Length: 298
Image 1: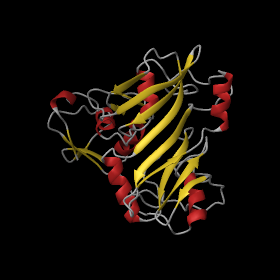
Image 2 (image 1 turned 90 degrees about the vertical axis):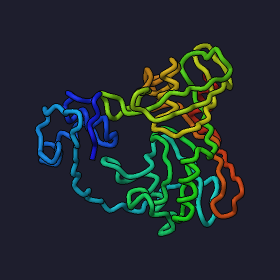
Image 3 (image 1 turned 180 degrees about the vertical axis):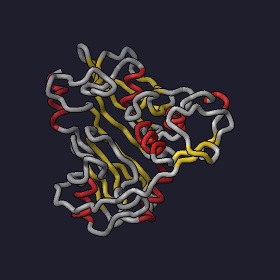
Image 4 (image 1 turned 90 degrees about the horizontal axis):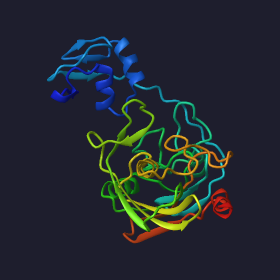
């Protein structure tokens, strides 16, 4: 149920719902409206209906059909493992969990083969063991939980912003300051629901600290430390201050040297309190070859 506030009065219902329910695309909402699954004050509406202040919007989403996720013998680069969890060094181009268009070749397919039944189930059958994620073209450390006890502990640490997450990136432009902080809320882009954007009105808190590792003629090698973990956070924040990531075709100019696929971003350091022992544990994923070669070329 979504109540309509005064400031949204007069907005088309599909646009309004896309802003209120950021997990639903405007296209999908339009489909639900055609099927009579969207109601305003209990009455079905058409896509061109303009909401009124005080309207109570209801959305009935049909149960999703869950495909069978197959275990696949995919090589995994494991940085750490014990009976409760493991940290994987994810390669570039690998999707973390199955989704439409990617039901094989994902990290989860490989985890199901490697871990068998020893994965947490809190996030459902499509995301067994997955407590957080990194983008397809981002490389580096990803924490996987083998049981619900570990999953609940790590999820709470993520919520409390106590997990150490340090990334390395190469950005366009030469940063003048040695370090800085971007504190700007992030939400879904108003017109492109697949993108994120700085949104001071409806966005969620997002804080990224950065420091310069090395300056080049027209690029800068930086480290970013996350306080929060919003979708595409580093990519959005660095683009918002005029220094988009090299290779980022979504938030920047695209391929850096004509062959680079995706943003130059690596999750190098991951630190957390072990759920069972209570000891602080930190892992480090070495820079991938493509990243080292770019630095050498610059």
